[in-house]
Amino acid sequence: NAGVTQTPKFRVLKTGQSMTLLCAQDMNHEYMYWYRQDPGMGLRLIHYSVGEGTTAKGEVPDGYNVSRLKKQNFLLGLESAAPSQTSVYFCASSSRDRDNEQFFGPGTRLTVL
Amino acid sequence: AQSVTQPDIHITVSEGASLELRCNYSYGATPYLFWYVQSPGQGLQLLLKYFSGDTLVQGIKGFEAEFKRSQSSFNLRKPSVHWSDAAEYFCAVGNAGGTSYGKLTFGQGTILTVHP
Image 1 (cartoon, rainbow over the protein chains, first blue to last red):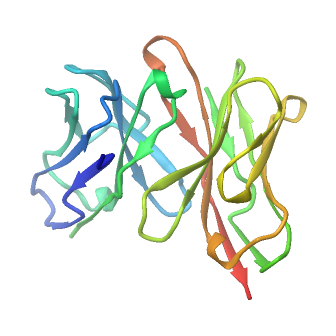
Image 2: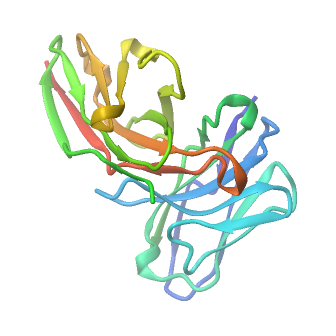
């Protein structure tokens, strides 16, 4: 099992550009999450999904959109990137059968110039 | 609202010394508590978790944590630190049930430096 994978690993954008980050998991988990990690702030939840076709806002959702068309994939979109979105983005997944333990991907480092 | 505080941003210990990382939480019901570790450039790995039962939980890599409800704390400990333990450590609190199942709130993290 690959676990949780993220694509791409690194990306540099110019202000106003758009992009999509892809998260995939092969553990058949119901729940998936997108976090951003900034120095001294820990991980903050952007959006999450409790099942295919459903998404919900987390703590810092502004400027991001998500979609979960397939159970194994969770996409994070930036429609018009801003320098404040420079961060490391982590995807995670979990299952009620695994006591809510979240499994994390390796992260995507995004820089917005 | 749930919250987690890790009072120590950075801790330095010598190899072989004991370690305690502090975590305080705020939560309205019985919390689910976690400790994760992040090595540089890596994702987060679960060290241990507490849901119920014995308040002293054992984790991987020789770590343990104790849940103290009266103090709203879940401190992480290790009796003898190894150089490979240098990393950033995150405490997290979660809930269960309803549409919020699975959501975690993380602390700010504690960076551990180990001196030889």
